[in-house]
Length: 250
Length: 271
Picture 1 (cartoon, chains in turn orange, green):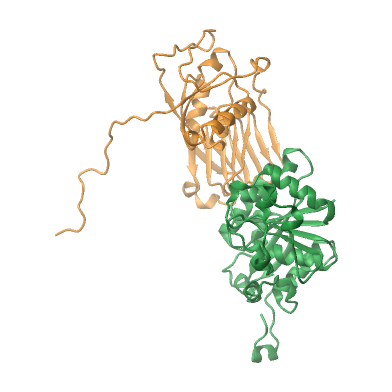
Picture 2 (cartoon, chains in turn blue, purple):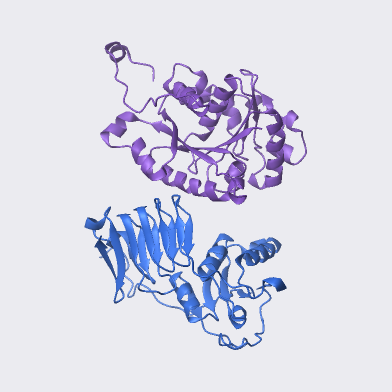
């Protein structure tokens, strides 16, 4: 008589549905959004705690405003919301969302989707919206700027650069550094490094002491466990070749 | 203008309260009027370590809520007239704290006191963030052990971004490393992280090393800051630490295993 009951299959998918509030953004200004969200959360604290959220970018895209998807996602996490999906995004916004672990939602029939170039009024169905004061509407995200960090990036800190990112100090375990461009670490890299986060697969990661927990280029990632032991603690460069990460000594 | 020091760590049980008590007593003994505040609302320990648990009438939360004045709540230490203790509440929790309330208390204390030591609770939640918000100096207490080092690293990140100085773009909080429960024998055997290992990850100015010592337990049991036990190694380590903080140049002791002389080997030295 054998011991445990052996099921025929290890798992199965079952159809289920959950209700998720959709966050319709009308502004791309993160500090205004933060202010409005904090207010809303203060009014309905328990409802918003750890609440999954669907990010809807129809209105901002209709107004041709650029959105810092990574910054927005980070802000939502900081406010104890859990962004799970993106809707109404452009190709680059969708790519950014996917890299950050969000799924993409198809358009719902009640909101007419406007192609980014066409100005069209979008009906807001759900009550939660972030209203921007009139003078801030149309404010664009800063042009990609390369970032230089000279202080150690501590565990739990996140750094995001719209261009290249250069760190002339250590990146601690548990820290995350992200760049839309390349990443250079003139020190020990012990945390996570994500380059080309908006989809640029030509980006590279360079570091002087490879001890990274995770490296990623344009969404393709590799964990420390899978990085060859010979490369640990060496000066290395990480690049992407045909959807596969290549890690070489410098 | 008072200097506000936060004794913090992230990890629990590393020696924050022990260190806060010892260092504030050390500062007071040297003639500086010092106040020490327990921010661990609901789990207060400072009053026990300082030996004033039977004299607590009002506490930090009473003062914040306007139920008592600061002078009514502050407890004067029986051993040193320069040292005053503001205990935490035991019956409430950290939600009773507010930035404005804490800010007002520190502002009032700053008028008369030279040093205000804030004993932070463990963690990175409200009690800990409020304890460090107004700080000028931070003593990051770390054990030479992997989880403690990582938690201290996390706390350093928070100190550099969520303090009032960081938010206002002022000079950053001055961070010091306080390495406690250090056991040179185990370090030599390779079982314990060394000072260098810890510094490789944290890269902080080393304020001092406090050896693992039996005198700590004895001191807390008797409600006496360990710095008053002048013969003990831990007590002396804290004396060195206070001296270094005040600008004196003291070489680091307690890094190497103490070489026991013959008499000590025969009769057992005091640890």
